[in-house]
Amino acid sequence: MQYVTSFERLATEKGLQKGLQQGLQQGLQQGLRESIGMALQIRFGAVPPGIMDSLEQVEDLQILRELQRQAMILDSLPLFAKVLDQQAPPASMN
Image 1 (cartoon, rainbow, N blue to C red):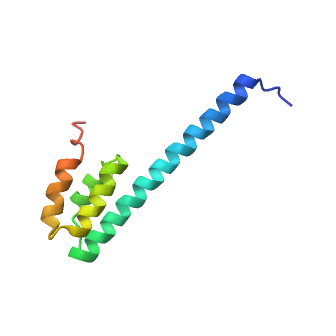
Image 2 (cartoon, rainbow, N blue to C red):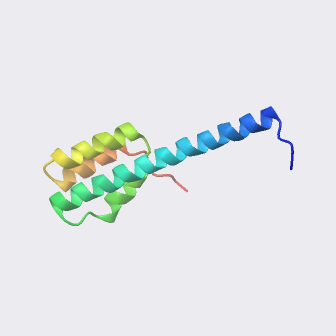
């Protein structure tokens, strides 16, 4: 059995904790995106792929929560698209 120092054990624990936090964050992001997509689909029918692509670029949970709220209260899909364009980060130029 390999000996693990206290430093190695602490580093491993911190790495695991960071990984769990990142996984939780990504899960929350994906859940909010799916909820937004479902709300838009229920309210307005088919959702253009461009809106879902833009939504995938948003990582901030606070912004995603606000977009979820907007998906439930705005009167049209074009209005939601406008709000999303204001919130989403600019597309990369790669």
